[in-house]
Image (cartoon, rainbow, N blue to C red; front, side, top):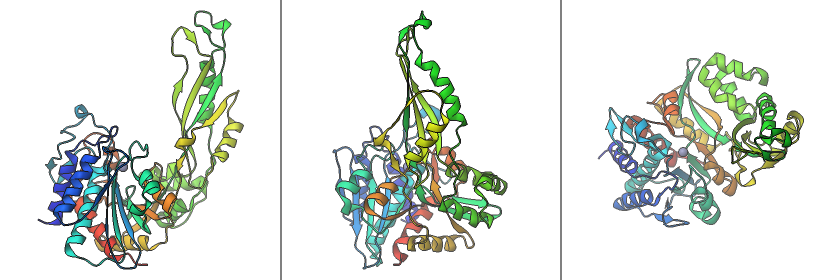
Length: 429
Ligand SMILES: [Zn+2]
């Protein structure tokens, strides 16, 4: 069997397991992967906080050079079969694409990492440093069964100098030149609540009460008008320098990116400032009771390096009326970055040079959150998001993730195996 066939088959088997989170049940995936490794003479270990949420970890010893962690999550978001043109758990292979929930996010990546790992072990290929594999639970909900728990309670299983995870690898042609995006950092999620007070009363007599819900109107309008200050983080500077040939002033950055390509503007837009998206509101639980309090929840994302206090000052200055601000401390997470000038960067660029001469690796910060954060924060590793997406259009892939008809091109799976093998065998100190 070729590596292409091997990775396709392994992905199909993974897609046929339902690991929708919640509840996850990732142990099914971990056991399938452990059996695959075992069949190929490679030992692994299941490490679990609770029996049904297992993480698979394995290690191949290398020389004294830098160690590398291949990390990926085995859970998926849900899928509504009625929205799909094929069964989301079929793993069907159609016209060179494998279909199923998680094909892109990220069982395809899981399968490619496992096949690269196994094939290097099978061939006895000498490695410059230890190669670690961590196929983990619970990324999509993130309630401490997966990478966060491993990094804290079993750090030896994921501690490496360098790591590769999801969150990059898309091929883009911007202004006639080709780039592969490399996710070198991510924003911080910093959600908060705004609490408004009034006085409850019977809905038939509004004058006798003070309706807290009505106070939300002006507050929401002011929130919509609030513009967090723009700033150019180093990753965006580097991206603009590379793609535009110069770094424009921050006020012109979005316009210049738009002129280059709408995709460049889409990538850069959420990275020029903190963002504020009010998404939930709670007031009375009964129609005939005027609410004495009202709570608005805001999804807020800070730039790496930004502190919640900076945003708090902006809210105090820009929002009218009386309200209380409550950060949600358990959900203040992310905001870490890795340097862009590292041996891992060079190894990725060398791989890009090989598959597409002239193409450049371009840094990008993710507007969302990935498990890379825990490995950077707890263990100080340099972690990038990179999995090649060359055969499938970047815009199409972005539409399919967490949506209907998710699928991955077998050509990209094969490239993924090649990429992991390349980095694992060439990473230099
Ligand atoms: Zn994911």
